[in-house]
Length: 139
Length: 139
Length: 139
Image (tube, rainbow over all chains, first blue to last red; front, side, top):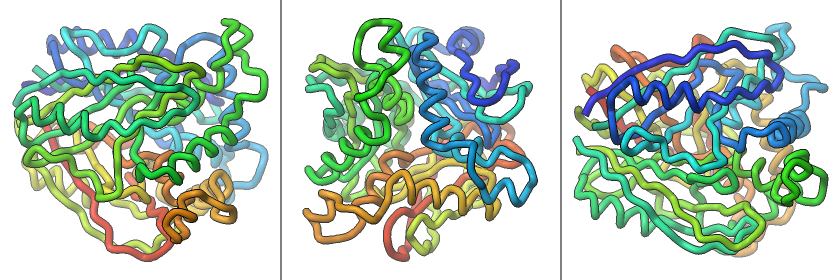
């Protein structure tokens, strides 16, 4: 069994920008040469998170509305008073959705459903260059 | 170290049906013959998710009410307008709760608490035959 | 590749007490002697959960308020009627935030962001002695 650490990089627009990273993760698995195992994807950031969704425009706008309503940006946050920045809500959204996702793969292919994509959600309030860690483990 | 991919299959009623799959996952670990490691359970679906809970009727009905309130089915979703189906809320609930769960095991036994069970939650709006991936990794 | 199971123990005050366990998890990785791999941290409990956050007092109080509002303690829960205890809301908060977190590490160091710490959140309603499982896997 071997471990193969890799990185994916991309640009985001911030403000709950939703990026489909399925192809890049699949590319990491192929590059590793590992056939069966798990891939752990991780955001080294406290204002972004990972999950899966059916990546079509309707679900994307529904997900943005969900976070805007559950954890609004239009109120006071203690974090903002501490630092003078305005991304207190971004930190809470990221903590709730969590920074890691682990997906099994067999014969070099992730076991995703037909309508299921891996998404990176950038909750920060400005465009950023982002990086996620892709750790491939298996045989 | 070895990897042992397996599947669990079961029927659900949909509409936030909550299924305790702890015994089937424990069975996969025993069948693998692996003694120490981690098991990754994964839903290859964008309308179901996994977590743990105390699997008693009270917690189950409380959890159903929670999702009915946080992400109601009684409103418009852009996903529904795109596809003409009515499960936009199912996609959001699944994305929030996430499709994977990783549990350590030692000496062939998962390190679950006494009152803690692994649950599959089917958020889709109709009964379905479902499958989850169980990837066992370890020594 | 080897597996190294370990435990971390600590005291909590309950009621969404938020504990930074990053240093203890880093200590487990060092003790294991494993250089590259993933660490799975797991709560063997149905009233606590794990995530990451920027561990500063503002984010901590914002996170406590978030859970107090999303899943209030001031209403009836079916769980409480079953058992006569008052922690129905604790179970729901823990189920939503989930009991496990997997973090990659390289060269013995977790790939956490600069402002990102691993937190244990105790949602139970009283002070407790708590334990989490730390399973280190890698080369």
